[in-house]
Length: 320
Image (cartoon, rainbow, N blue to C red):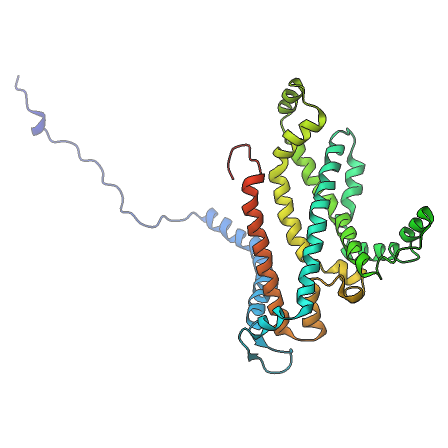
């Protein structure tokens, strides 16, 4: 018997892989992609028409002078310089920052307390509906109702006058009280959404963590301050960012609640200032410049919040 070396035996040839190239897409995948474009298309078209085009237009008008009828002329940074020197813009920025500084911490604080209280209730559906009703109600309707309540002869002023025996406060006519009135309405109108968000966050906390703290002798206040609040801090941070951006865009409450931004421009906000320049005086260049300043102010405040959150926000997985 002759043994043939394996090196001399002809090895079977393996089939060579097919040449690389674009894979043919199946028919059902093409149909699926086309239907995806059909469903996403209206949203993209709407964003392009009502968001992207106005944004680009305002960026162009910020460097031009135009009243809507005459020929557009380029003025460079003159609109920004004139606006930064305008006392009305500076007053608007101060009022807007005051509204944000008052409404955000107070609104979020009340929302956390209410969410903790509702968590203890077994039947809280009615309370959630009552708190959430202002969120889904038209802001114009809310402001009109509060306007009637805050009048000098309204329900709130009359009640204060009868209880404390003083002259009814002029909430909408006094420069100091007008801004506080806007803050009250803003807090009341936005509290329901934050309550829902915080309640969901509290229910997501593991009961075993709370039970372990109770076994260690922690009281209700200690559990809230040392466990619930730190675990809820990411949601509080998210809500604070949204609330600050919303406060910087305050307009409809001021427009309806107070006439011409209140007495002595006490409630004049940046967005109302933009509206007044653009649609009151038809100065679209300075109005667009003020809108760009608002955008930059919003970005700066948001970046500051993201910088602070690294020190005050607690994440369970350690990620920031």
